[in-house]
Length: 587
Image (cartoon, one colour):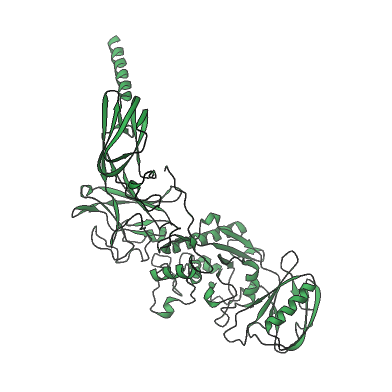
């Protein structure tokens, strides 16, 4: 019994001594060799490879424990850099960075010397045209249907999509499995795929892969796990054992090139009818659906490296339609006055005004506005674009109370609004019981009277935002979305209208992203109206399919046009530089 107790005591002493003995360990196990990626990437986006920086970011460095007691003196030899102090009280953590293929960390404790061999693996990303440089290049989601023939199905071959990418590793890695993952700005993994490395001459390569914008694309059949879901400015990282290398989705927003990240701003307003929001059934559900529209637009426009911000922080609200607060002069035709008397009531107070012959609609509108102001109301005149069939431009008078809320206009009893034989007056009225009356080809720039009455009330005056207005339906049922664009010199540039059918088909017709496309491209036409039908294109006029083959794709030319017509050099700027991200020193 005494012999057994002595044996246990010696074993305990031996175990404690082993734990206190100096030496390197990783994940609780002694280690004398470590494989790391040569730190070739540019995690802080300063245009300098991390291995060349005096104080590199700590994204790809390795921390390894040095156990024992006392004080260790550390030195680095060869292509490895020591980022922790050269004197370290034990036990402690050693931080190191691989700058080449061979290096050694030497720890001296008392009279003993301990060595950690560091083997650097050169992991790189490659596009079809050649290696990608992390200091100037970036990855981007495919603009192809994800499973089309441009993506090779075998481990080798050539990809005919310029946005394909693959991993290149040393030949000794052939037969190993690497992991490719996307990591969002919060450091959370978004998606992950295993990659088998295949020998290709003097190197090992992974299969060609594509980045995609959502799970619908990621589920495209026949791609054998070669599609990775990403978000704008995600980190795409390859891991092989303890070695890791990364490249970003899109370049930093402060850059000006075609890969620089851009951000637009959506302002979503859901209009009530009969006290009930146009979609959702109640205000909370309506706001949630509004935020979903922002998320969907983010996914589609990620192809152009554009985002509209975090959906949970988007400007979304439910609003009531306005009262009858707009008076239109010569709507549609733009005729001059022939002379007559105007009579109406504003907030219940009568207004009477004589108008001479020969006045343009805007001149009549200004006279009406002055008379309304004399009643203590606020009146603003807006001149509308001329209808295609009109003789001139009509004008609207927007009438508000002193506190800025919309006033109420009405006829004065049975008296006509005007006795003028040609220059007619109309009070705008929003009645969504039969839907919102849409514009026609004739009135596309000006909008219908009902649209103007609604939109002047619900949109903001910020030219750098895109207003997205959701109504229950359009009159006639043949339309589910509209856009007012700058190129038309319209009354409401950069405004999108959707109805609940457009919301219902949000992942099949992608109505919200299509109409936003008209605004960003500043283009009223559809590609299938000017050329062959390509139903996978976002801007197709009539395609719909809840699949990866549906109308989701934006062409390189369309992305370039959006940046030109709506980017940092455009007026107004709808796509501003993506905000600078905070770089974390420790992940």
